Amino acid sequence: MAQSDSQIYCFFQGEFVPLEEAKVGVMTHALNYGTGVFEGIRGYWNQEAQELFIFRLRDHYLRFLKNTAMMFITVPRTADELVDLTLELLRRDAFTTDTYIRPLAYKSSEQIGVSMEGVRDAFTLFAVPYGDYVPMDRPLTLGVSSWLRSDDNSIPGRAKVTGNYVNTALAKNEAVRNGYDEAVVLNRNGYVVEGSAENIFLVRDGVLITPSVADGILEGITRDTIIRLAQEELRIPTVERNVARTELYYSDEVFLTGTGAQVATVGSVDGRIVGDGKAGPITSSLQSLYFDIVKGRNPKYMDWLTPVGAGRGIRAAPAPIS
Ligand SMILES: Cc1ncc(COP(=O)(O)O)c(C=O)c1O
Image (tube, rainbow, N blue to C red; front, side, top):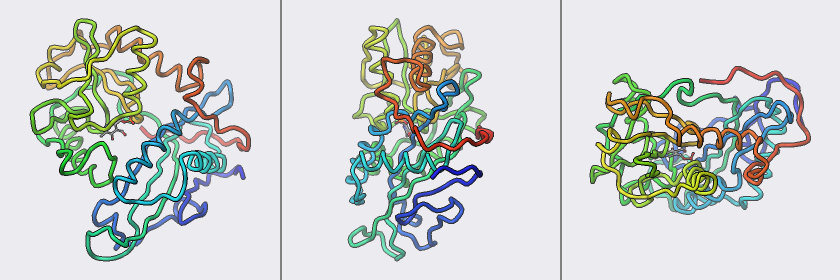
């Protein structure tokens, strides 16, 4: 049911409740031990079409279900059922602005002890109006973090587990305290992994390069999108390989990709200007392709979008969070 008020809903304990009523107890396993798995999904409001388009919604849920299985968290729904549930939530929320969607599955029993055996699972889902995650009106400044990415055999970064984000939080916080917009995280072998919540791409002599999936990255859906667009639209293949820290300084272009950061130009790394400090030609081409597609302006890629569709109530757009 569409609402005309400003109520934001949350799917919690099997029903839609006002977001402020969705609360967990302090003894919850996931709160104490980081045993949750989440997704970050974006919806883009298209004013002309009066439609909210969700980008690669089903792909996010396919990744989510792999990640929950990795953590022995049972979500008793298929990807298609999760898509339907998300659309139902968004029809209730009736946002007419860009939106961020957060599914979260977690170990929910309230008990002491880290074992996950016999611990109950829960699933929750909410969405909020959302603007830019990183500044988009200027190139970003990056600093290489002193915090190394946890090894795949310690805490697998690919799994999008809540506990992993301690590593991310330390890296991002250090970068911000040092005056940078974002962190670049290295792995134990000294190779570049990614940003705190973004994958990273370099352009050197017209070649697109990104760290490989064996380097400890999160296998980003935006990363996959960019690799496909570069190949399909620009005829530029992407080389997936180890990337040394100093290669960032020597690159012609560097950019970050992620649901939050979208496709963000990097202007400098550790105070060294990348290229001429502005978005280079390949970054710019990929940015315009990406934003046209996610906003529903490129008919060729409409399969990547799920329209929220009928049932929407009209509601004034809240100010995006920046
Ligand atoms: C650590 C990390 N790397 C990369 C990404 C980018 O992934 P995606 O493009 O699927 O949002 C994210 C964002 O979710 C992330 O948290």
